[in-house]
Image (cartoon, rainbow, N blue to C red; front, top):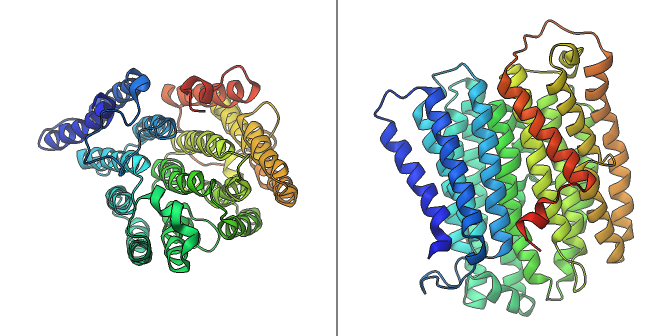
Length: 463
């Protein structure tokens, strides 16, 4: 049971924050306290790392959750993303938004995502997914602006609609297979067309949460309507946990002859890359560029999902997903630290290096990582992803991925050139020690991991 200690700690954090709602604790003190709590939670994962397995789990939980290296890595990254999110929340002066309820909901969302990453059963996955989603609906709407409330309502309605498809798919699967556990589903999935239809309905819910091609329109409005730091959390932590479910399915059908699902993932990869680039090329808003470009990066991850076979693992998908989530979280956090919640266009970045040299350089390094520039972590991720496609004889996916990477250079270079070669605008900017700390950590992670001086995956002993 000691392996469940970090999750018990996260529940205790939620309870403490609920009790703090009746106090007059300041925003700064509350955020600092929660950062301290999550550092302890992160440390607790490493304390129990050697015992992080299913040994000693209560019989009630066996078959419903899995404590493996994959789940461990996901939870560690989710803790890091939560710390970035909380730290970036310090840069807003709006005390009305950052009430103590904000802390309760933020912690509840992270707990739901961590618990979902452990789940190996359809009903339990949906329960924890909805725990996180309900907290996020409220976080988006707490801003009280018309744009935020509209975004939260749209997200709630569409999520409820897709949840119905998920439940219908679960009913089909249970009716034909007699189980809702992933392992049993994978073992008998190719024996029933109704179960396969149910699986597609279940996966459609995850496609929606990930905002892949065909399911992305809501994400542009919702992410843009949320506050900048919350947009970063949605684009990183929430997408990471949602992708985790797809990757778990990938681990299972890796041992089955599931050509249909692989062809579906290949089609989604191609369409997501091209459509995502088309949407991003015409954008001038920096926040929207990061949002729509995430559709392209989801397409890259689907290349590995489509390439899985007996020889090809899902390590590239996990590596790319985890590192991309951290980099995009840093990008949103730095943007929030410098401009707070202002509407920032590319032209507003003009001359930013003069007033914020470190933060500007961090945004440039992040953009280069998104492109896949050598000696950045994004380059390694793309090498792994495209390499898996070539090895599995899906060379056409690698070629299309490289082509879309070249296309993406255009809009990321617009950000870089604006920072260093355009004239400054009258947009108000803010300077703080915290922003510089974020910038240093972002640059260190992107460059050290990308150049081989540091390997987070090896350090976590995930594969």
